[in-house]
Image 1 (tube, rainbow, N blue to C red):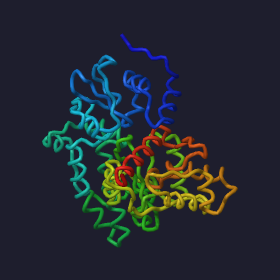
Image 2: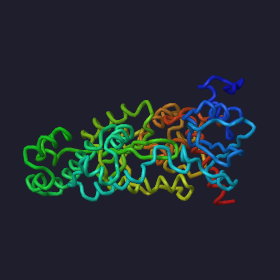
Image 3: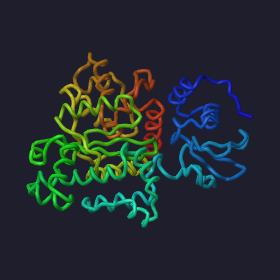
Length: 370
């Protein structure tokens, strides 16, 4: 029989959760029993009768409320003696790449000219249909399409560095015409014309707070956003127009550094990022975003203080709007700006994530200095 709780409707429950340093116990229970994935990564649930802990949204059978305990981090649950659930695998990031797929990606990135067909996948113990579904879910394209984009991305870099189109084409394709057609379909121009064409590489990355999309131009990060943000499509369109570029879903070396540094940030090991950034906005917006980079880890700043930091004391609302248009989440830390009354106000990734990020930074900052 389902458990009922006399609390606010779903939208208000999420807002309430975001506005409290410690999410109320009844809110946690409701999120757990409703398997509300919006709370995944914000806290974890442990079952005293089984000794197992899960992420929110786990499809396993729900226990009685009196047998439930909540923990803010995986470490807290492990320290209390609970073991991770084999169903929802809370030790893994939300959307984390399975090891067998990670090995395939490493192989493709190491040799973009390689072509893995269904028979090759089966010999590696990977089912082509399952792989296709995973890529469609996490990258929006099939595995075969991803391979093509990786080859094209490699070709773009080699042609820009001065290699001849013919030699690049014949190394990865059966014919020059086939290469030219594939290249133009992906990039929008012919291989020769691509020398003057900007190309933005995009990829999806897994984090404890859900999937994020990253975009890089000339090995500089120009976007990092949660994939479920409503403004994501508009941001991508803005980048395309600003840089007069086309997008390719493919790997670049910057994404390896980004994934590594994000992992260190979420584990509490990193407080500052060292990645090359490419901001894209008006001079005023870019001034606001650069000022965000000066807010220390584990601290917050009001919109008024943010306005004063750039010498625009009367432009509080304009500063708030510019913050909302920041395209590089977490690294350009717009989540550290709050209302003058201490309220969270808005955040493109959702107030739950903003509160989680602030709690995470405060907790690790206290551990460092305490």
